[in-house]
Image (cartoon, rainbow, N blue to C red; front, top):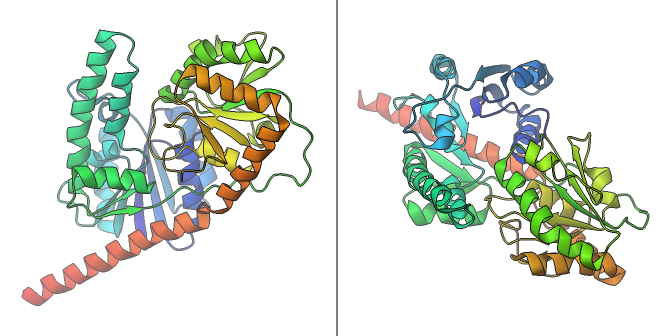
Length: 394
């Protein structure tokens, strides 16, 4: 089975939730699928330098530099144009059985008359994120811009879904959201796994009085969450727990995030592994105000059996589990919940036990890869039946 896998970044190193998802899936589908990876990259030099790391799980890897598109395109589509990538995709179409596109904003690289089926996987329902940005916009002008992007993105995204032979979402919630807009679609779920960090150590030292927020800060929703957390939540935590420390851990913090560092706030940048930071933290925070799909940062914290305080955006796609997750959407209650876990070992341990139970019920990466391979097989089988029927009518 030959698959053209089209993505907006090289899936290695796994410095974001999206890259990690694709890397973990590619590692597992490689033995059963001959994958030709095509990345339309906004970090071209870095991705090109790292491409050889994927040679073991991909038959070929091509990286193309993203070029700015026309001003009237939705922002995400505008950021992922590349004539060279489109030409490369067109050349490969005669030599693959399935095209897998990660994100509606890449579907334009596949010509409408492609001779093979198209699987469109949405890690987020992207227009819904623009709707959330309207609610947290900084002033009327920013609100108008976000609403304009919401409308443009919705039109382009739904058009891409309808073009696809098969769609997939990461969660049942996103699948339902897609079907509410376009009920005629065939939408599957290809989930994220949560077992890539392994199990926590059997014995752990008493955690430090640390509140940890992990994120790829090159992604604006994470940067927004860091600014909101440090501006509105952290000061309230420190009023109750003066010796608490706030850690912002993750890739490429922009200047306005690195500028949050102070006596009580540490901004680390990229780290080799988040596992050690998770294991030593008292509470893991997910103060997201914009987001979709499921949050790898929350899956990792659950898998390590950590007490978690999150907004409702941060726990999207997860089962309702009040014994494992404290959900607060305003700064005052979020800060009070963090302080309560910092001050009360009993409250922390109760949440840790709940997190471990919830993690045990979540999908593994092997199960996620099996779901993806099933999509491929169904598409290949359907295409084969279609070609056989066409020959019979000649």
